[in-house]
Image 1 (cartoon, rainbow, N blue to C red):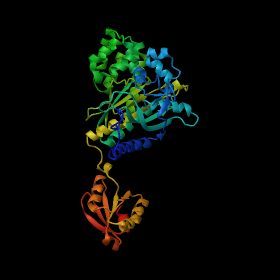
Image 2 (image 1 turned 60 degrees about the vertical axis):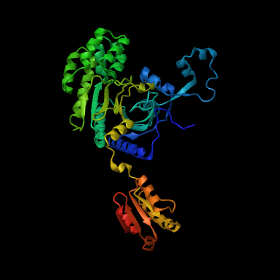
Image 3 (image 1 turned 90 degrees about the vertical axis):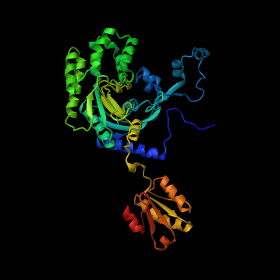
Image 4 (image 1 turned 135 degrees about the vertical axis):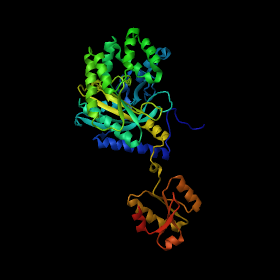
Amino acid sequence: MKPNIAKGTRDFTPAVMAKRNYIFNVIRDVFHRYGFKQIETPSIEQLSTLMGKYGEEGDKLLFKILNSGDFAANLTDEQLLERNSIKLTNKICEKGLRYDLTVPFARFVVMHREEIAFPFKRFQMQPVWRADRPQKGRYREFYQCDADVVGSNSLLYEAELIEMIDDAFTRFGIRVEIKLNNRKILSGISEIIGEADKITDITVAIDKLEKIGLDGVTAELKTKGISDEAIDKLQPILNLTGNNHEKLNTLKTVLAESEIGLKGIAELEEVLSYVETANLHNSVAIDLTLARGLNYYTGAILEVKALDVAIGSISGGGRYDNLTGIFGLEGVSGVGFSFGADRIYDVLEQLNLFPAETLEGVAVMFAAFDAAGIAYCLPWLRALRSKGIAAEIYPEPAKMKKQMNYANATNVRFVAIAGDNEMLSNTVMLKEMSTGTQEALTLEQLLSRF
C-alpha cells in the first residue's frame, strides 16, 4: 500500500523547514523585543476546556479523540441506533486537539495564577488543529504564533500589538493593511437596528462579507430570523466610507443612542491616537465588517490582509475581557493576536521574499579521497565546529564529482578539499561553490576566514 498523509497536513523538507524557521525567528525576535515571555501548553486538552468557546461553527471543527480502551463498552444499543453523533461524542470522547492557542492560554492563566505577575505578557508558537475543509492557504494542522497580554485594561496594549504586527511584516517585506474594529460597535449596531439579542448571528454573518458578498450575508441573516427592516438599516453601515476619523464621526451620529456603541468608538479613538504617533510602515483602517466570528472577543478586533497576494487573513486577534471567567477567574482582561505562519509562508513564497541566505547549507564541507584524508580532515572539522561554524565531512572517499554533487544539492557554501598535496603542506584547498574560486589555506587562515 502506498504511504500517504492525512488531508490538510504536510511533510516539511529541510528546504521548507529553513524557510519556516526564518519566519519563526523573525516573529520570535519581535515578541522578545516587546517583552513577551514564551510558554507552551499540551496539544491535547479536555473537551470541556475547548467546547463552547468558539461558537457553534467552531465546535464542529474540533478534532475529538476517542477515549482509551473499549470506548464503546458502556454504550447501549438504543444510543448506537439513535445515531446522534453529538450525544455519542460526549460519551466516547473526553479530550480533543487544541483549536487555537488562546483558550488553552486562558486555562493556563487560571491554573498558574499564583506563579505569574500581572500584566502577564506571553507568546506561544505551536501547532493547532481544525477539522476544516482543506484548500489553498487553509490547513487542518498549522502553526500559530500568538502574543497575549492579560491582567490589564490599558488600550496601550492594543496599540502595541499593532506596532508589533507592523514591525514583523515590515521585516518580512510584506505590504499589509491592518484592519481594526470593536465588538462594542457591532453590539451598538445590533441595538440600533433592533436586533440586540442576535449579535452573534449578525457578527458571524457579516464576518463572511468578503467571502460570500452582501447578497450572501443578507440571505444568511434572513435564515437567522433577522427582519428585512433590520437588514435594510444594517447595509449602509456596512458600506460606510471615508478615512478612519470620518467613519468614527459618522458612527457617533448613527450610534448616538447606544451607550455601548459610543464606548466602542471611544476605545477605537484612543487606540488610533497611540498608533498615529508610531510612524507605521503599513496602513491601519477601520473596517466595520470585521467581526472574526468568535464569541470571546469583547473589544478591539484586529485582522491583517496582505495587499499583493490573494489570500485570507494572515494575522488577527482582539480583546477578550471575559475569557478567563469561563474557567473561574473573573475580572482578568486580555488582548492578543496570532500570526498565521503557514499563510505568511505562502505569501513570502509567492512574492519571492525569502532571503537568499535562508537556504544556505553548512559553511564548509570537507572532501577527501582516502581514509588518510578523512583522518586528516577530522581535527579541522572539529576546530570549525568548536568556533560555532557549521561544518560537515563527506563520510567516505568517493569520487570528487559525487562529493561536489552532494555539496550542490545541500547548498554548501565552501568545500575544503584535502588531497595529497594539501596534506603535505598542512593546508586545505577551499573552493567557493557559488563562484568556483579556490585558495589554499592553513587551519588558522581558515578559521579567520569565517
